Image (cartoon, rainbow, N blue to C red; front, side, top):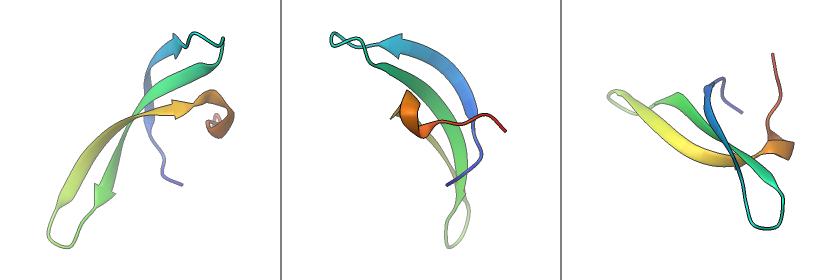
Amino acid sequence: MWPGLLVEWRQDEDGGWHGRVSYAVAGPGDVVLVEAWVPAALLEQR
């Protein structure tokens, strides 16, 4: 689990919600910015 920034919400055709999340992941030589759509059930506020 990585801390990230919720950028956007969307609802799919079945009524489920997803959040577009941006987060940074440390690689072997640098840091990579990742952006992904994540089901709302997997997101939590901290």
